[in-house]
Length: 105
Image (cartoon, rainbow, N blue to C red; front, top):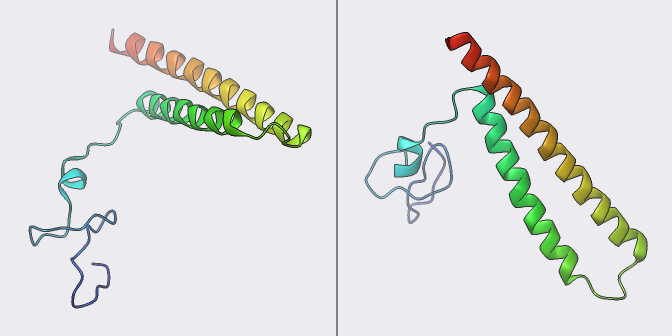
């Protein structure tokens, strides 16, 4: 268990959420089931990349009009690489899922 001061609440042993019930695991961590297959893990990764792309697009839109051109170009290039990564991971996910379905038959 993580070290705590006398006045602090105990924290979950898997994350930093305070635990009120006297246990050492929060409700989320106790019920969390991680993805089981590589295809599911890739699907989660693609979803995270999409969220990251959304956040970076928001930053890009908020840049001042006098932002250095090369910095803006690097951000746009990075967004393109993230998009391509999502496409490639999604393609690999599709192949793994199709392979798993063929094995089940």
